[in-house]
Each structure stands twice: as structure tokens, then as C-alpha cells.
Length: 204
Image 1 (cartoon, rainbow, N blue to C red):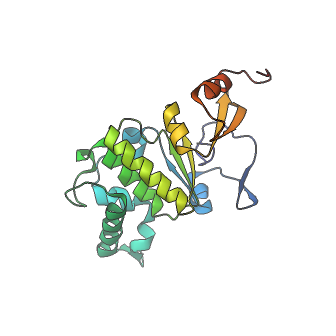
Image 2 (spheres, rainbow, N blue to C red):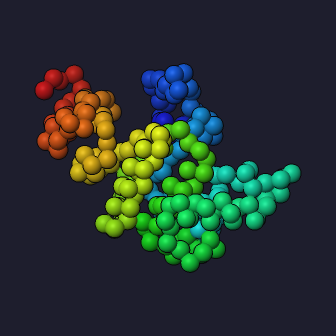
Image 3 (cartoon, rainbow, N blue to C red):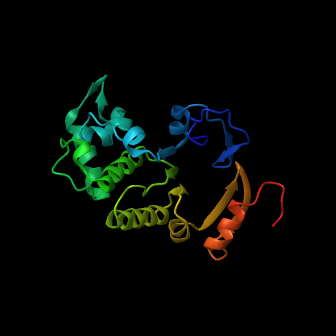
């Protein structure tokens, strides 16, 4: 939330992006800076439950389908179709209600929405929470491909095996303070738990 400019608390510290300090006090500023956020609570904060699949995907990039203030639906539909194909969203069509999709396909549609904004950094907050094993594997493959294509991804997860599978580097926090930084080679579940329970100022 701090990195996306929507934290209820005043953030401290600095955010450096592309070698320069940026101030993010609002999600619009974060989006302009090239940051996208997939929230933990998909049903409450991720999907627009009263909209269809296509509208959910295009909602953040309607300006790309707009001419003189008018939405060109053919362009909007083309964007949505392209994203559905790229993400492998299983749906009967772009006018299908988003709520009729499985949790995994809803999540892929949300990620597709943010990829249309051409982000530099994608923030994923517990991205596989509430999705089945098959959808998890698909999302893992997608994240791996996005990283190989040059997109920066920051993941938070409550599942340690997920972090060990996905991350090149793991930062561990305790009571809001960083207590350690582990490379892929250094990271184990035991070491992460040791750091996660190490109160700030106390050396293990």
C-alpha cells in the first residue's frame, strides 16, 4: 500500500525508481510512475463485481480506447481480447460476468488489467490466495515469464514455499522493520521464520 500510494498511514523512508526518488501519495501518482498493484483481497478490492470480464480488464486503460472523450468499444474489446489471450483467462467471452469466473481466472484477469498499463514494477500481495493448485501453477509460470521479459515484481506471501519458489531475493520484516535479506541460495523456511520472529534491535 505504501508503494502504491494508498496507505492509511503516512509512509516513511524513500522510494527510488529508475535511479530517482519518487513521492507517491496517491495511486494515480504510482500509476504514472509505472507501478501496479494486485491486492490481497480479490473480491473486495480486486474485481468490479457489477462489471463483465472485458470491463474489468480495460477499466484502468480506457484512455487508450477513447477519442475526443468517447469510448470506442471496438478498441476496448480488442484490448480485452488480447489480454484474455495473453493471460489464458478461461471465459465464454468478454461480456461474461466477472463473478462467474473461478478465483484463478479472476486473478489472471486482474493481472492482465494491470499489464495493460505497461508497468515497470508489479506489486503482488498474496497473489495466489484462494485459488486452486492448477491456477497457482499457471500464475507461477506467468510471473516467471514476466520477470524474464524484464518486469520488476515484488511479491508478499503468507506461504513460505511460494516465496522460496518465486523470489530471487527475500526481505523479511518483523513489527514493520526489516530484520534480514536473503538470496535464493541462502533462503530456507527455518531462516525466514527466525528473521520473522526477531524483534528489531535484537541480533540473532
